[in-house]
Image (cartoon, rainbow over all chains, first blue to last red; front, side, top):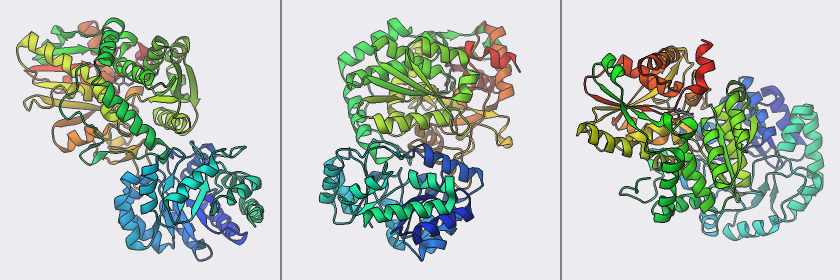
Length: 238
Length: 390
Ligand SMILES: Cc1ncc(COP(=O)(O)O)c(C=O)c1O
């Protein structure tokens, strides 16, 4: 499950990157909506968002990228709360649904703040996928699991997105805890950078999300590099 | 510090504003911080230690000074609440000492902070030196260039200053960098936020620590005049000095409360820092509040001659006080603030910081015949180069 920044390096290239990812074995694409102040993101994704915004990319441009690939592979939008709020919750979800988005992840909308958006998403059959962190308390985990839609996104580490050289040692225990709280699939993301990481995570979880590494490939080598990287990652999961 | 008022329970929302719009990783730690503060603020030992430090180290209470020549100009009676006389030169030290004590109490030996003008960074570095805590301050590289002396001060005090190179390289990006650090380091680190902004419990926590301004002023004006003031006027960046002052008077319906934002080049120019005045609403740095943004929800860069007001958001409690009609928010341009800065220096022999110079400019434009209290939140030494270069 690769993460790509919508509209990066530019809208056409972004479309091509998504298509390449889909052609190369991605099971789902997480498509980022660039935001000016992405608190959950490390340097690579932050910079990609900044570049997309500097190029004039709007949330609608990202939805049009979503639309271009949604027939091929499910797309989950990763979008910060203010972008959704400014558009209006139901209006945004409606547009996302019309663009074929299967789900939404809002990294700065914790469970306590998410009720209204979940209703809007349910009404449009868009899955509001929650995030859980290694330090999410047990009772909280249960509540999040209960309200989850689509899958549960387990953040592998306490930190922002970005490539890491090793996987956190507590990952297996964490995934166990998340599994106990939900019947939905569990996907793991943040810090997963290599095929070795991916295959190790695949032994624990149902989905493996690779973000910064893929975004870096999009910036360095465009759709060709994304295709190559996603094929390599997909092979590691076979 | 005064004891907490009634309703000592947790405060996460101010009307529709506030909340916690943060990555999941921060939710547990914010719960922990909230509980630690609820415990600390009713703990007599904690309060005794804080009061002692505020008195003997920071220099509280600050005088409430009746400014005769300024009063002559306005035609009323103007009192200046002299936060500029505090150690490190601004009200920021009230918050920094309180939060550093709290960090220590929570067993967190590492402290991070953001800073724009450098005042909050210097205050936090000072409090950390005092309490033996490790201190790292995030500062936009553009602000580091503009505020070189404060960078050197922080370093002398033993803090590490990390340049932030993203975006406009100013305060907004420094706050984001501090939050990102905190997401990764939260087990060992306390984030001392510099204003009444951010996710709950920060807006209430910072207000509680700054309310000493308003509580003191209320007592002092009663002693001096035997009555409450007609107006309390304060500048609003994130809004910590203003909320600290207003909270002392918010239940006195006859006291007018005026928050003065930075209009920069003018509200129509689009280059300003006045989200409250212009009715903006959005999520920035963990809270729903007044935020400058474009039609797509991208947060805009703020503009102000004063680095301390150069922030596109404001505290959620202010947004609520605005909607409730309890506080009036207006904005003052760079030029008017600089003129007021110069004017106070000659009238009273006090060089104010550029931030409260905005409040002064508002007062000059709206003189009142009654009793005014103006919060002189800091002194202007840091701003000399900026003002003299104009
Ligand atoms: C002297 C002074 N006043 C006011 C401010 C603005 O902050 P706040 O609105 O939180 O009081 C600053 C911020 O740096 C400051 O240094």
